[in-house]
Length: 440
Ligand SMILES: [Zn+2]
Ligand SMILES: [Zn+2]
Image 1: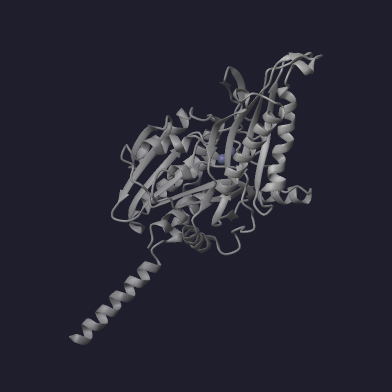
Image 2: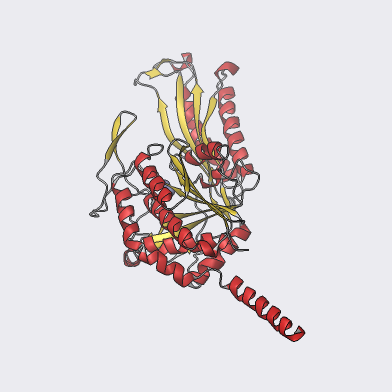
């Protein structure tokens, strides 16, 4: 009796161990992703043909809301204007948010694809062409595919899954708008936040690395004031255009002479607006600046440096204090820093699915910015992983390399193309990564 119960217990323990190790059935997962491919490609083409700019994603969010509702998710719409949240409770376990952004770009599509966008929309009184040139159409499609898989594989995970269809990433405002509302409206605070972004490397390769991956950014305006006057009599005026020109050059010394060369940072003056006539010295001059950085101390140093240069120029030009230059911060977003333990966990799953050598760990952090992490920024717990996935056709990629180009196209270019093989591939990988976050 004792012997029997000992062996029964041993068998039970062994079974439990085997079950724990085989909890995620990748074969079944792959089958589910690929058998859903035709439906998802259809959804993708549909969204691609009807791109919607930031905070106008009415049609896209309706597609997301309808699909998630049909799958049994508890759906909330109109979060942060056009955002959608779908919640699926499946017992006790971690709370994981999966995010897809839904907005497009004011870019004219030049891919020549049969499902290319020809849409024009009015923005600020001007007609502009629009296109999904950043792959957010694929992001949204993957989320819908993953949402379906998570329902089908409910027996392989326990916890609460929150699907987020986010508006307005391109103006880095949508995540802030959503997180300001969704937790107050009852969305549970997540233990983990996961997301994927398209990159112009071949399908089959991804970049999932811990630490800083995307830069922080500031958009700010600087106004120089002077004393306007006749172009022939500079002695009677104080010229804000000359001060601006000096400032533009001096700003660059903050990067070249003050910031640690090992630490990447950028100051770009993207617009200079001053004056109207050849023979008039204007009373003011506007500069539109864009900063990029990884560490917040570099950011503080740049902002402080810009202020010191501005005021130094005002002082050198003998301006009264009330005419000192003004700085207006328009928009700011912090750098994106992937959680080390979470990246490790996700990579374990990705490698189990597609084998080793697919993670392009040498891919450097990008100076572009994201608002993904702002979905958890107001919370105490900010554990996230955002990884890049290759969507370029492998032959196109090789061809581009032969021609000496680094990529066949880049995000935000009119030729940006998501190869259709990427649709089921990252439905599979995204679902696998997500399932892993529910494992102990
Ligand atoms: Zn973009
Ligand atoms: Zn994007």
